Amino acid sequence: MTTTAAGRAIVTTVLDVELISVTKRYGNTTAVSDINLRIPRGTYCCLLGPSGCGKTSTLRMIAGHEDISDGDIIIAGQNVGNLPPVKRGTAMMFQNYALFPHLNCVDNVAFGLKMRGVAKDARRAEARKLLAMVEMEKYAARLPAQLSGGQQQRVALARALITRPKVLLLDEPLSALDPFLRGTMREELKRLQRELGISFIHVTHSQEEALALADLVVVMDHGIIVQSGPPQEIFNRPATAFVARFMGGHNVIRADGGAFAVRADRCRIASPSPSDGHAGSIGGAVSSIEYLGTVVKVGIATAATGEVVALVPDDQFFAAPLALGETASLTWAATDAHPVTL
Amino acid sequence: MNRDRRGKSFYILASLFAAFVLFLYGPIATIVILSFQGPDGGLTFPMHGFSVHWFHALFQQQMVGDFGGSITRSLILAFMVMVANVVISVAGGMAFRRRFAGSTFLFYLVIASLIVPSILVSLGIGLLFSQLGLNPAWWSSAFGAQLTWTIPFGLLIMFAVFNRFNKSWEEAARDLGAGPWRSFTNVILPIILPGVVGIALFGFSLSYDEFPRTMMTAGDSNTLPLEIFAMTANVTTPVIYALGTLTTAFSALVIIVAMTSMAIIRRRRAAKLG
Image: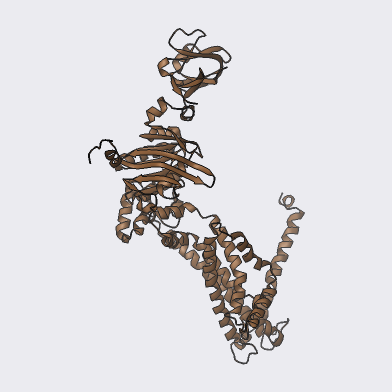
């Protein structure tokens, strides 16, 4: 298909998922309000936001486990609004993995093929292949209760992938794991997504997870999409004060009736009179000093914006150490300040 | 040290417990012992010898009661109640997972039959049958009367079972392409199976020894508990104890068989793990 005058036809063919004015209401409360989102083919997309922001409802509507109150969901060019999950070409990995406790790993993974009428030997052979893909073939005969959290997750991943979905939906997949395992599984998810070349839509409340994994970060709050874009764009140019605060590592500074965000690691601490005329600065008393290894986190209590923070490289800090209560100012280059809406 | 630790309360509670055990098993033990009374012995102690004479007598036709007929009826009825109880309780448990119009009222309506004196239920059903011009019988009116007793239990067990049931199992089944029926047979039923077996056992044993609800509803042919009760008035020999021993042994057997088969299933599932 070639480009039309509007450039639209070609766009739809390379999208895995498109949400058009999607709304979800529960009684009088609106969980998701009129959101639009386009996820290009083979994208790792993270829906990011605090709890209650509508990210899980959005995922469940894409999966078909929740009715859409209004709007359309297009998956691979097909409007799936009224289709059951199995007809959508999606597969979901549940937050608690939801492995069937009465089936061993092979039969858990083979379940999707059993429902499609694949014969026992064939589906078990296929299930073993998928278990091998997630390095769980040794545990094929175990019951879920005999596996650790990380192992259960690998099996759940294999089970979701056996139906060859076009889009894999993951609901807080890493939140039940301990921090070390979380890091390992994060790499694993990214590797799988790259190898399979399908889209992953991953719901999380961890901005670190979203930055590490996503090609497309979608920040949600109160049922709307506040900002979406590549992770660097979200982190470097937060559109709103909410995004800047939620992504962390930013100071949101009020000025001239507006506000701007500046990354804490781009801020420096200067003696009371800043030398650089182009730099912005804000003054106050040093209110906290935390040594974090590679950087020192210095907080300055200001009258205008409350506490602002600079992440100062350790060698710089210790070359001219500060004490609590001392007067200092936070400075930044004008190019590092980005206006945000409050 | 030990004596210090075991204070007065230990001995009070221990004797209370001993009394409880004695109260529970004493009568059963007495009946079992007396059932082995010698041929010349009577209904009470002392024992005149030791024999299995009364067990023999039980299976001879000189009996006042109808042991064979009543136990057959009781077993068939218990089986009917067991099946009906499982089907209705599981279906009801599934239905009550969602709130529906009148669900609370329906729940109290079902549970109320646990509170209504059983003899009144029995009397009511018996009266209703005669008003409708129907003959009460163990397989119709008594069957219904017993279900008023077993279904509330079954339903409460199902509530407890579904309380621990993770809804995302069902969603996962749906996600993987299972329709409602196959998600029931392939996922829900296997997971709740221990609870279902429990309901079956409950239904069977509640029916098998049910007395007050059956009393006015069994019609002409007695179930075993009714027959035993009738025999206590007429039979003056230890044969009634032999009957008691035998039926108790049978109940124990049913439970042991059920428990063992559950244990075997569990072990087989475990053995499949490599």
